[in-house]
Length: 324
Image 1: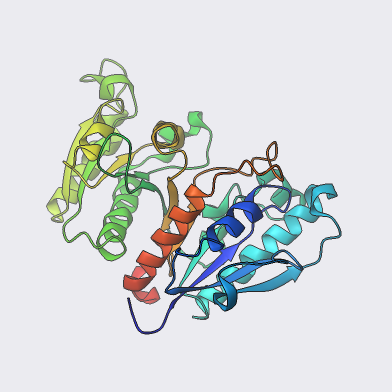
Image 2: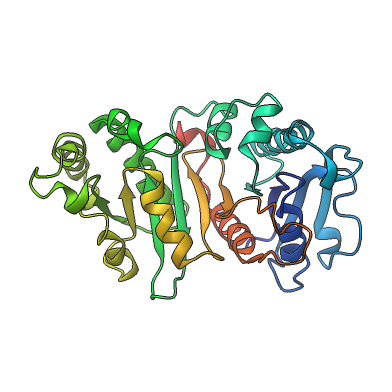
């Protein structure tokens, strides 16, 4: 670890959800990230009480809430959105080395005037980044090795996926993922495997032509650039190649084909990563869990994993300009 502590910012997300609970639990672990200092962006009084993190943790208030459990979407979205904006500003200014975001409600963000379907698009827009790739990672799984994936499309309806996929988009987002694996994960020569869109990866055109028409040309281009890629494999078998250590990540055409797997295998340790930003950003792979908020049932495992991975990335983060 470097002489100076890594500085990680954390946004608390929707105040009605489990964000505050899992952040408090993670930061109260006496042996957790001892060489890291934290700036938490949230509402006034959020961290009132004892934290074993002590002076390693400070709160930067972005608003005041009379009773977080009794507020509506607009008020919740306003404070959650302001926290994200402040975290982004701090990262761009170099005041923190990486950003971890607790879960938000998309409906609340919309009610507060933030027109984004998720953190990924919010961060991309406010950092003025042309292209990002949503990645998911579990550095260990019950089946053995790590499972990492890059999504070619994220928060769009399934019917729009074939229209959104183009060979150029596949190539750009795959290159961003490959670079993140090199510069953030520290993998010298990442190996990628591509999963298909259709059943059996279309089985030579029997079940569609998206693989041959949209993905295959990008795969050939990436190979020509010297990137280690394999496939296109059926999406129902490609994950095993990663868990077995044959590849470092799988590249997938749409959101649920990947997230259904990682949230089943690594529900409490999965991490969302936004590759391509000028700074590392991670998030737990769960949502706001309004139904259990405040009941002491939330598992902080995914938040801990997100903080640990962000700190690891921040140690080796590439200069911001090199992503542009």
